[in-house]
Length: 154
Image (cartoon, rainbow, N blue to C red; front, side, top):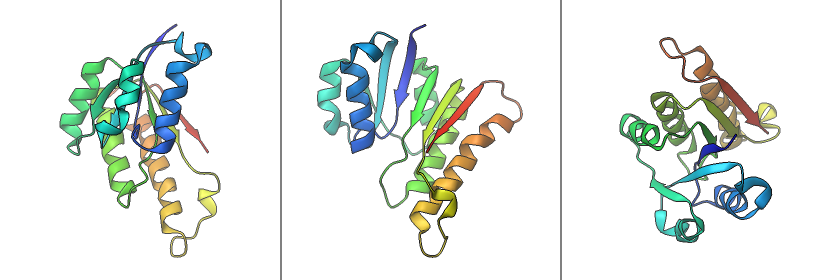
């Protein structure tokens, strides 16, 4: 079964390399119908566009962004939290947009050992726990049957 996949933070190193791998490796690209890459700075994704990805500019209004994601028809989203000083708030906006878009499968790339991070000494690492909580709450959102599967990769 081929998937319509969306990857966030495609203008960052992790999201970009993941997108590039999916577009160039025959083992993966034969299973992807369409790849959408979300970027804060779309110019950094010109090479991905040339390889066949469609680039979507990130919008901070989750309602507007959710409608744009819904229009893609994506059935799976790979959430790569942005390497940004406002990682937590931006990631929450992404999760809310996923809910609004009714994307069925969510994969979150988190960080190993985040549950052991101390809030005062390692606040940025600790944010991953809060992002994981937001993703898992998609399962318990009343009024929607959209989300069927969440996966957290540490």
